[in-house]
Image 1 (cartoon, rainbow, N blue to C red):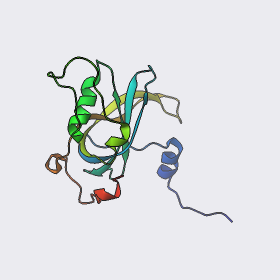
Image 2 (image 1 turned 90 degrees about the vertical axis):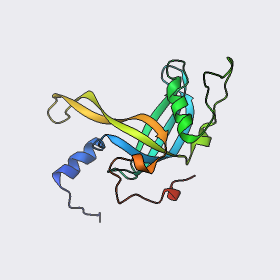
Image 3 (image 1 turned 180 degrees about the vertical axis):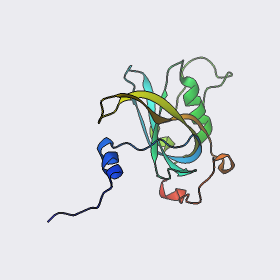
Image 4 (image 1 turned 135 degrees about the vertical axis):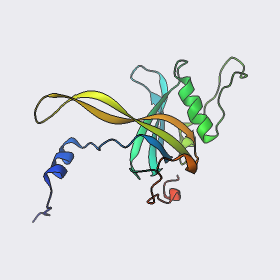
Length: 165
């Protein structure tokens, strides 16, 4: 015999889409939970970083991804990431030529602040078929960890050592 659950209509609807409502905009404490090096759809080298929220007004344990492409136009994002975790990064005084970035695994377990924004996108309501504007989170900035800069820090922050690799 199966397991019976008493579900509300909202719970059933949420399970269909598999989506979480977006988090409030603000600065959150996070650890780098996963890091991979690969290529973007445009075949550019990039890091895919998964942040796990450890402190903030909501979303403790939620995961958000950030993409850090190693192209001249987007290099500032990788520099920002490296500054936040204390890794070397190219500066205006760096001689021209090759610069060696860290392996993706080196980022694991690093504690940072992430600035989360809500980003609008067009979608279709699955029930009505109507066009709608929906919202998702985007990791706008990665900063050096500073507990005092976390937006409305929650009393439910978890022990960060549980996430360190």
